[in-house]
Image (cartoon, rainbow, N blue to C red; front, top):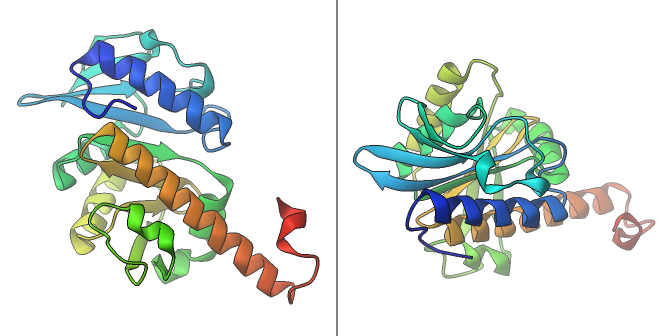
Length: 221
C-alpha cells in the first residue's frame, strides 16, 4: 500500500486497490463508502471516489481530482455527496487520507450505542495498531453522531465532534458507518482494519453474552 501518492494518477491507482480490498471484506457493498487522498495542501487538492460506484470495480477514471470548492479537474463523474466531510476531517486533523466504510458491524454498533454518543473500546491488543497507542490498556472513544442528508450541516456536526474528542481515531455516523483517517493512505487503511476488527469483536462478544453463551460464536462466523 503506497504511503504517499505523488499525484492524482498514483492516488487513483492506490484508491482503486483500496476499493477492491475493502469490497472483498464486505465493508463497502453496493455503492457504499468513499475514499480520498490529499495530493496538495496549498491550495488543497483531493483525489476522491466518484459518487454511486461499486468500490470493488473502481477504475482510475472513477477517481476525481477536486479542489476545495469541489470543482472537478480530472476523472469522470460527480464527487461523493459526503465530500464536505472529507474536507472537514482533512482540515481538523491534518489528514493525508480519509476512508469511509459501511460495514455491518459498524452500522449495528452505531445504532445500538447511538444514545450513548459513542462507544468505548479498551483492553484489546489490536488497539496498538492505532497511531500513538502503545498499550492494550488504552481507552479509545469513538464518537457517534446522528446521520443527516444535509451535508453542510453534517460537516459542522462532525467538525464539532472532532474538536470535542481530539484523541479519537475515527467517528461513526449513526446507522451509517465509519470514518477514519491517517497521515498517509497506508495509515488510514490500517485504522480501518483495526477499528473494523474491534467493532466485529465487540459485536460478536455482546451477541454471545446476550445468548448466555449458548450456540457459540463460531456459528455466526
